[in-house]
Image 1 (cartoon, rainbow, N blue to C red):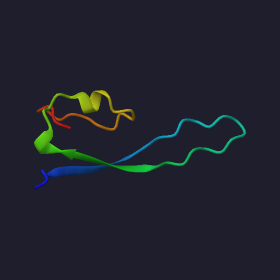
Image 2 (image 1 turned 30 degrees about the vertical axis):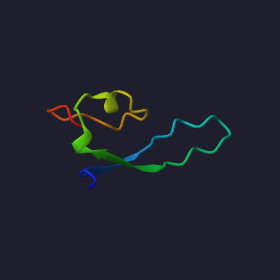
Image 3 (image 1 turned 120 degrees about the horizontal axis):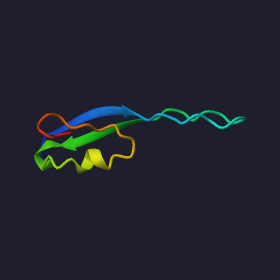
Image 4 (image 1 turned 135 degrees about the horizontal axis):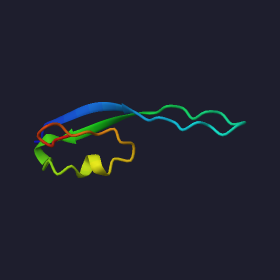
Length: 61
């Protein structure tokens, strides 16, 4: 049996394009967090490359 998971959607933001180039498209990703495996250590939020994870008052994402 798989543990309960929480899903949320995040958007990436593109940096301004250099002059003469087309802007990057915005991609959408799903983030799955398995609450049963979470130790509320904050490593996921600390190392999230896009900064789209935040911790709640209890330290869980």
